[in-house]
Amino acid sequence: MIDHLSLVVRDYAKSKAFYLAALAPTGHSRLVELPALKGDLPSAGFCHADGSDLWISQGPAITAPIHIAFRVPRRADVDSFYQAAIEAGGIDNGAPGLRPHYHAHYYGAFVLDPDGNNIEAVCHEAP
Image (cartoon, rainbow, N blue to C red):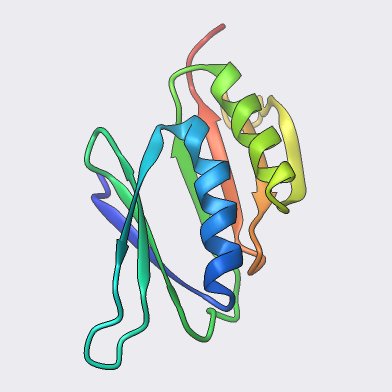
């Protein structure tokens, strides 16, 4: 199990607003901000009750996009993630729906974040 992930983003404020809205449906509802220390840039953590976190900080973004998938317990959470991410400025990269080529109950949605990373919410449960 992954404890936390960190991303470097080009526009800290824009990405912070995007992830705050997009990750609320995944259960990452607590925002923690760390101040800039000793020349470091500020960081924001989007925390989940299970202890897993996603952190962002300002800097030169990775040139090749990455893919991050957040597991959620219900298909409705996938739908909510997708809607919130689109409203927060994300770009559609796969609307909510079944992906039976992965497995019979794989229900996911994909959105590109402000840096072009492929962010997904997925539910593996039967309806």
